[in-house]
Length: 243
Image 1 (cartoon, rainbow, N blue to C red):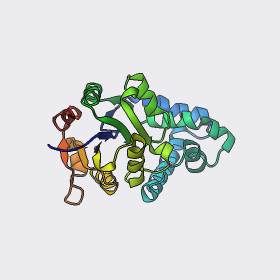
Image 2: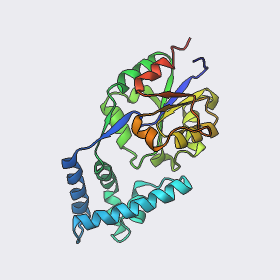
Image 3: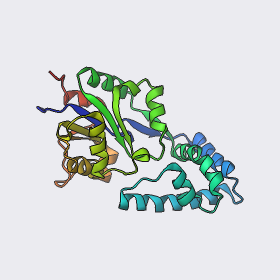
Image 4: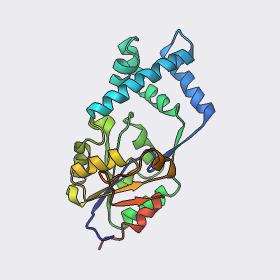
């Protein structure tokens, strides 16, 4: 595949990392949320309310393409019936536990060697992701020794806008100092990832599609990617060393 791509921006959830089910830690996370807040009802009833409120937030975020801060998420959307001062001080911890309730986020085994190789091939690398937490992804990058390879890390939790808003893609290109037309985006969601990147003028969009994703939403004529991969390491078959 011939191209003049200089920068590759990558999604995190289900692209570089997947969620592993861990029932014990998931249950512990839910119990810790209830304990931190000091709920008077049963944990089951409490989490049922939280799930309903989070669905309402997701619907609003999807419609507006806005991302609130962790503090606003918990004080305004999730726990408006508790004292703001208390919930504000707990917001970061609550977000981490809320994410853990779905399972453990672990990187795909081929991610690190692929990232290192792409960097050595001369590409500027970055991340564009919809996230609740400001700290979780940077901590993962640091812990796994990957932070040095990503010049531009744009998270909706910091930027305030979410994919597929083209502005989050444009911001990533601006921070990297690369013309959007010379940028590629790698994601896993055909409608969200392709639409936003195209509107921002990115030169290429690659979608990682697994069977589960394909069953939910296959690419269409309207959101056709430039390439489809089944494993993250297949990026090396698309992005050859830059001369």
